[in-house]
Amino acid sequence: MRKKIVAGNWKMNLNDSEASELIQNVNAEKINDVELIIFPPFLYLDRAVNNSIQTKVGAQNCYPENSGAFTGEISPEQLQSVGVEFCLVGHSERRSILGESNAFLKSKVNALLSNQLQVVFCCGEVKEERESGVQNQIVKNQLEESLFHLSEEDFQNVIVAYEPVWAIGTGLTASSDQAEEMHAFIRSLIAQKYSESTAENTSILYGGSCNPTNAQELFSKENVDGGLIGGAALKADSFLAIAKSF
Ligand code: 13P
Image: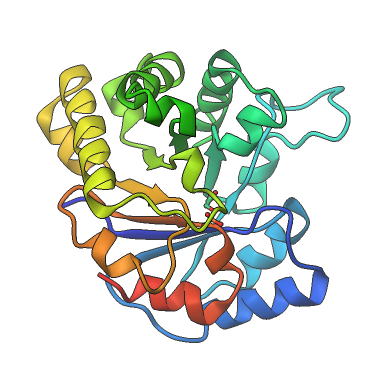
């Protein structure tokens, strides 16, 4: 059985004391049968690892080398050495603002897996692509160019997050039917590339304006295994309410 997961991407938010408070509060209430992962800014990762009772900790980014002259960057090996277990790859903000290509994302996936970190791979189409009906082709390309070179064994350490770009931070959520349709499509691609059992075991999360009001409807869909939450993950009560929506 694949895992139910609710993950919080804090993005570039919260100061030092706010981060400490949120780490404490998301660990204050026991949540059963759902894996909680938080993705704080780099500065707070060490603290998050050391103060987490139930939450697992992931990084929002990495550079695909183990060490060296890469000023300002953080390596998978460094993340692993402080107890970080996951890393986001392919978030639309990094694709569009930082110009990260599918080929560069592929190198991050490889670097993370070779350091025993799990990858949360984000994919999704922009508004114009959805409007012209090419969303499936876009997501298929993203998966093929950055993930599907992996062996079936390595792919077990990948979680997929479908985040339609037009739904991120906009208050516009994909309908549960739109999410289910894309998640089922992604699962069928994994089954074709690897096997039915690998597809069945892969958690596929939805991201994009997910909140305590719409989470239950989204999570009721067969192929939606949880959420990657932005804005609503910055308050412990809304993050935990989402986690209780299954
Ligand atoms: P919002 O939940 O703020 O739309 O952000 C989603 C997201 O980008 C998570 O990675």
